[in-house]
Image (cartoon, rainbow, N blue to C red; front, side, top):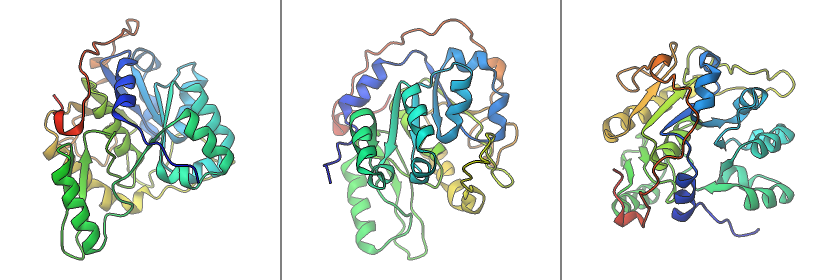
Length: 283
């Protein structure tokens, strides 16, 4: 198997330099996403996931970043993945997607996508795994992670720098937030961060159903958002959803009117440079 080239600090800096707005809209799969006006989506950098990209592309909105972390999607909706990836300015996938791809698809991913590495696959693990994560926490100041040493305890974490890795938590939304934070957006605004009821998606999946597991994983997901809220106080993150399982004490609600800047996108200030993790403190 070809050696995986993970996203680097230089790659992250190039993404920062390509930003066209101060705000990032994370366009997710919850039903309330469709309440976000197209004028807002057109005037901001949009980071989207999974099948949500279809809605944007059908309205002639090219996502700034398309993210895929579920290998099933590439297997079951391969043509859609290629359409969404090629219709977006950049594509980011994780190691799971790459490792489970065909050789042909791996070639495309290596040549056209950024690949993220996760610090772990499961929140539980043996003593050796927990010691390793504790060491990494000391090594990287931008890796915020709580490692319980009890057998039943689940770790929680957040990574401020996707060039060193990311913390997974059963929802691609959390990955997207870490990406947006790493790209130094002034505000990160979630659209469709619902996680209520059966956690249904707003787009049609009748031809290629992929059952959502979010509802049964919600008790594992919420501690990560609570951890993020407590440990990343400088992040200005908001939720447009008026029907969400995430308390507004964790991610505050924001009105669409506070985002309704329909002026043309601009090139934001990109003077801030990334160096190594040890030398960089996120402002």
